[in-house]
Amino acid sequence: MRTRARWAAALTAVLAVYVASCVDPQEVSDIKAKVEEIQAQQKDIITKLDGLKVASAKPARPSRPQEDPNKVYDIPVGDSYFKGPEDATVTMIEFSDFQ
Image 1 (cartoon, rainbow, N blue to C red):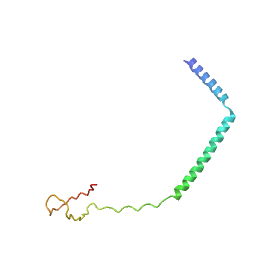
Image 2: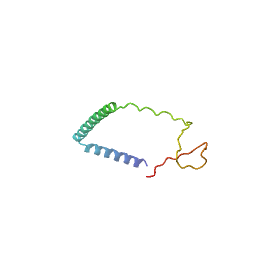
Image 3: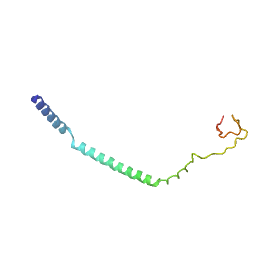
């Protein structure tokens, strides 16, 4: 079992050296320069977005007045169709639009 572990460790070390030797330093510096350029662009975009947030900040809309659930509404029935006695204590009204 130890022999397999040693072989695996040796193979891993050889592969790591091989991969490290394949890297071109010029390509690495080009990639780093491109990453720095992209980071600078992102900082510019974030600065512009922060400026837009400050410029477009709108005042809060006034809140709606609280409705009273116990309020009684007096709606004239008029010539509308109804079911039940005319002098009922409670009248239910349905508003609809037939188009």
